[in-house]
Image (tube, rainbow, N blue to C red; front, side, top):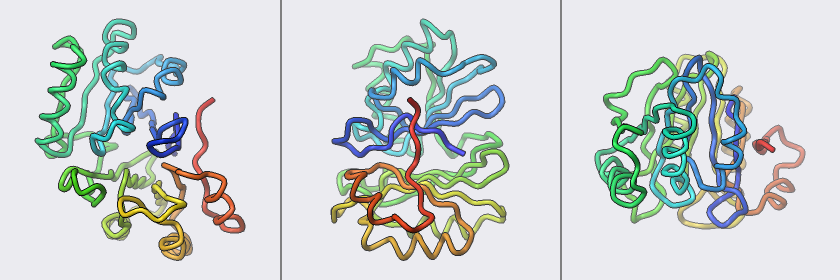
Length: 234
């Protein structure tokens, strides 16, 4: 379903960043600076608009958006629409692009999720991550090729995403979830969540893990299960 530029956590060599295409739309979920060299290799034929869904404003999730806006405006000649789940995130992103990145005023626009309507967009899903970002951390529910795709972003709980999965009357469901090999308050510790993920899988949910802090250790833990680590673009 989703394609990935990177699958690592904040201090990894590549940061987690996903995308998909739908007709004339290219949709990215966050965008780190490490993703930019791979982004440039994408085939943009037929694409008319680039959308970026913001999960939260930590640097490993938004560090490359300003560069992408410049590139889309000056090279690709494509508009960029930033989708923000809260007014606070909108305020911070506007300051970043206008005051720090110096993006051209016609190069991008920002819309709140409550005012955003596309057939591939279902909803923003509020979650809990870092205390400093309380109320401003989200995952997303999306419709990709008629499949339900739930993307957690950074979170320390699966509860809102499980609730969302159960609420949607779509047969084929995918969960892309962050996972951590080490026990941290701000992320999903794999030892505490493995049984939950396996139970969801038994219920027919296709599960992929991302935002990895130790891929080798996580690979070892999920070996013998049908849980999958996301593949990344070369």
